[in-house]
Image (cartoon, rainbow, N blue to C red):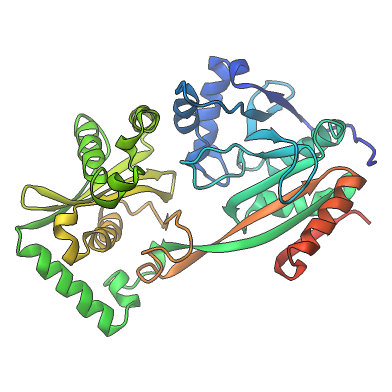
Length: 380
């Protein structure tokens, strides 16, 4: 079994339950979202706490918080839950907190604090390896400074870290687009199709696009979105937000709290006085994250969802120049694949903190085809 290492850095990590989060820590957590590298609104308190407040949620998250030893300032945070086994590691360990509405996981880490955070995390896990044999990671961008630093440091702590690319998620690097936006990336056939769809929509009335981010216009736009999403196949399958009381309570609370931090935008593609398509998106300093989209099936022949995404890109370039990338937060084979030109490799990983866990994790990775591993770091 690996020997625990004392943490001599300026930071220390501890595990907390949701009931142990006080107001001061929650405030620091919210501030950390704006100072984090990488940014991740799905790990913000404005997103997580409304989810936990619903009485129907039974999961018990474990918050790994990393603080400065002197002033107790929060420099890093991850949200996990305990499992006895999983497909990556058939031993007790931590997995990302399973919120079905969150599309990106990982850590929030203050800029310039990643090395201290990783050392503190590894020290904590080594000293608690009888409780947790490791940490499983999923659904985070492959090229992250924290995962690179974790890969470099595990050898010094007698641990191992394996990282695997799972799929590519569509995205748009707005600064790389040509003057005519997305159209510059399309074939002539696709450009004709998009013009045809726009003309079809214009037959129903004047077409406009707008983004709402504050004031009364935001809750009004949210209610229009919820009604729009609760139509067609989503309503029939019971997958719309309004189909579930817990989901609609969560979304209303979450959007309200995100709005208080200027972290949410609701966009609408309008035709006449009607809404053809609408979406909820989260924003950080320079990145937008797609959350939900709905469209009016009355205009299905015009593909309003696709037209909405094109107009969204154009609007951001014109009115929100500080936003340089949109993460579609979509799985493979989504409708965005042929529309958005860029890709974000999404990964999963496994940190093993004991010799036994390393051996078992190594066997599991071979069973799951070792050729797929992007890279691996292990103690020799």
